[in-house]
Image 1 (cartoon, rainbow, N blue to C red):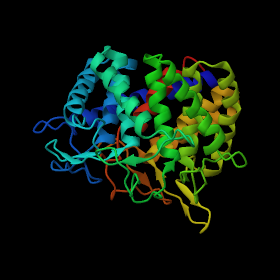
Image 2: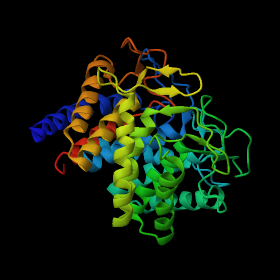
Image 3: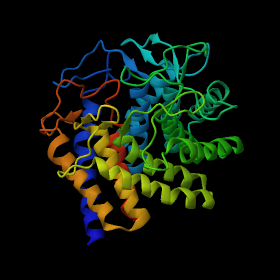
Length: 400
């Protein structure tokens, strides 16, 4: 019965990926005038041709089409990946100070040159995935150089972990935040999670001993410092000395980390580390169940001090919920996790997929009404979470 459910799930998400998600980005987001991809399509479906182009969005587009070609072998995906790679290498790399810019204007000129470590990590993630399908040595060389820059400037040799952000010249800055909603702290769970993700993909293709050491260390940063070993939620914000500054539970990051930590251990290939994180990742997944509603969707956040709960169901949180619980099912064999994964996918199919205009809505509110105020595609709204969900299921279905 479980294998039949997985077979149906694979068929449904593959159809969603190839008929709805990827065509949206290949037909509506191609910037034929200035190159690469547009910076924004708003919630009403309007293309903003003069929108700025963010590094994170473009790195995620590069990863998405590279991964889609690796798994599905459609030459149209390779063409889109190549377009993304060419634009990214030409415009986002800082040829004077190294690293990648945070933001370009719509014509491809540097607008904000700060070195946000989160963005450096996603650049590694996209470039390494492109290397996996092409063996493009320039992409690998650039990914390695970004790794070395992160280690040189961001790694805290005294207290461990990675600092958040620097100026274009790699000097310290006061405002370290990814966005206005984040706490202005020197170390965050979010950046560490995506450095972990990037280093994992780099280690797949470059078996460097120092990278292995730092990937191992990052896994232990999560087990020892970021995961709350009483609640098994993730602490979100820290000062330089790792004092916890967290005031919320981020359910999406909880469930996302539950499978990315395990994936990192698998790619590392250390059986002792794999054994150590297996039960921890299951406990994180178990704790994440507190965010699941009766309809199968996962709420966004809950704040400790005020008790406020954000019941909106964001697109990326639902996608990570599907993968996270599917991973927990694979680790444990417990049918409950499979059912949670299937319910989350059904919630997506019923409420988040835009069957008229393509892609997914940013979110739906507690009354399940689509949020049209936020972007359909933009600086943060990307094809990475939903596409990765589909691709992970396609790859995992035969292994579980």
